[in-house]
Image (cartoon, rainbow, N blue to C red; front, side):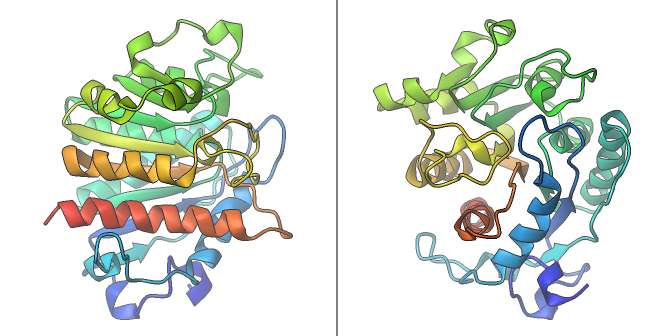
Length: 286
């Protein structure tokens, strides 16, 4: 794997499998997207943009790469979503069995289902924090129960899910999650204590799935379904910081980047978000 195939421009001694505490798994899958295609190119764009990251994080006064970050070979899957979910689950389970903190980079949001299944098999009594412009609570869409528009519903069938940042849904999805577990972008603007309210709904052990369209489309236009009225950088990272301080984050994924060759800023935002979240998590792990 060449340098652009690894996450961040890290000295190779910190990327070796035996040394690394963190494993990054790229899954360039985009079979069920329904508007803008290109999420299969997202992992490669994030890895490339990550080469420009400064490895010292000012906010946490840390260099999280020294925990060791190993980038796994790309999990290249060209099968129906139901089979893809099984393959992601198997791969992530292997990483968890090797005691790796796993970060999955999508790809469309359906890749998250397999990763979450793996964590639920290994850990008990966990909840899922979903950051997303859409609740994804359709039971079936376009002939598949594993469409990217069904992710929230599949998760809800397995464990509690707290949904943050949504601002668009179909009438079919209304009422399909407990209202106390749903925090719309509009609610967040009106409520100064929204982060504390989210934390109250989460269990002690948490998995986080981040659809990049949770961000306002002015700073994150490169998604399959960009929505205006979203969260800004400070709101998202502020939540992730508090979750890292108060909860035990078991793993996370970042999905739905559809890179645009004419605008590299969203690619870098996604890479920075991953490194920032890891910095929060490991600064609180001691």
